[in-house]
Amino acid sequence: MLRQINRRRGFSLIELLIVISIILIIITVAVPKFQKAQMGAREVAAIQAIRTIHNVEVQYQSVYGRYANSLQELGPPASGPATPSAADLIGNDLSGGEKGQYKFTLTANAGGYVITAMPANPSGGSRTFYSDQTMVIHQNFGAEAATASSPEMK
Image (cartoon, rainbow, N blue to C red):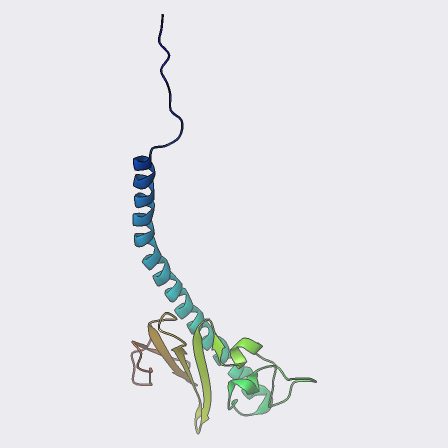
């Protein structure tokens, strides 16, 4: 007669360890790439926020005859209609100065205004940005703040 072969069910410990080690290798390769992609996305969002500030500064200037002195002047009012001190042109997040792990500042000067964007923490981004009423965005790689003499973005 034919002998029945005793079949075992499941996986051996060695097989499970091999699968776990393969998964860990994949994770060690994928996580840094994912973090770099996230950083790039935050930087693109910061550039877009600077462009948004430029657009609303033009709107603010056409309505009130001057550029806004701060992000709060572009933001929503606490209550009531829009005024020069709270024009309701941008949301609370950006008017609060921080969006997408970047800190934004808007200051007025004699010729117009200056916008700066700095990462809120080291994992937020690898570039800092500077722009003014000329609407040209300058960038600096590293922690040092970008200035008007920093390279322009292409």
